[in-house]
Image 1 (cartoon, rainbow, N blue to C red):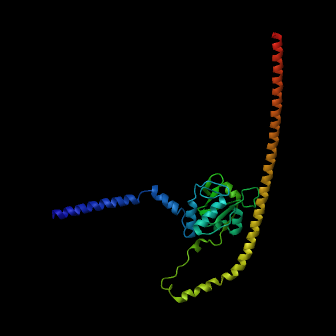
Image 2: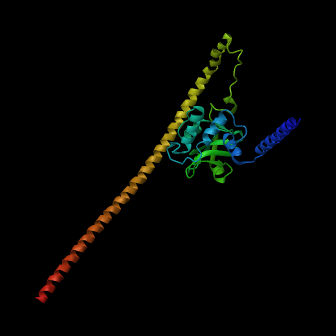
Image 3: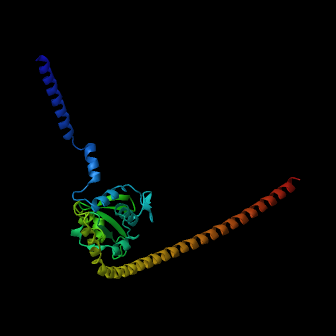
Amino acid sequence: MQVKSLFYTIFLVAALVLTGCGSKKSAAPGGSVTKPAKVDVPFKGAKGDEAKLLKEARRWLGTPYKYGGHSKSGTDCSGFVMEVYLRALDMKLPRSAAQMHDFSKPIAHKDLQVGDLLFFATGKSKSRVSHVGMYIGDGKMIHSSSSKGVIETNLSQNYYQRTLHSQGRVLAHSGKASKAPKPSPKEAPKPAQKEVEPTLVQPEVPTQTVTLAEARRRMEAERQALEAERKDLQAERKTLEAQRRELDKQRQELQSERIRIENLQKRVESQLDSIYVSDQGLFD
């Protein structure tokens, strides 16, 4: 009986100790328990394609800004968005912010979902898109800032409210569309299920006509964007040529000044030599 009582006592003490550790662990606030959860699912409702885009975008946080770049050693705004969609959804987007604007479907600000694109006109022209970011929910976006690199930014900031141009959604991306219903195991082996595949392709035939018209519109928009970039490059080239001419002029002036100083130095040396010769004659 004493052995049995001792066994029960040890069992109860062990149970109390284990219960205390479990409650202490579950009640621990913040720290390393909260941080990973925030990285994986920072905003409620992000799932499917949205979660993939969000997770990939946050991997780029801290990447420095580099004009024309699209890697983690340096990226600009459109290169960042392009790589996020390519790596998360295997979807290739156009390269520039203006081309992404023409490529996406316009949506209202109130309809924004995680993964939608935000376009800004930060230059002199308020109608020309020059910056792009990706909406991540909770009134925030993630983008590559020219001064801070890839960061998260609150859209309530005055600068981004003032320069916001429009919002767009990539046609192949729609929050709930990322989860397709899976056929039940019983229906999968039925031969009748295979016959459904040709019928699913038929509705896409008229869509091809719309896609061709849309492609022509996008190609024209891309041509206009390239033409605008060409004009900007020409203006920049003219500015550089003017600076080069100014530098050549300054170089010529410096060269003339150098020659004048050399001639003056020769005259001074000649006069010193003549004075030295005359002084020797006096002493002789």
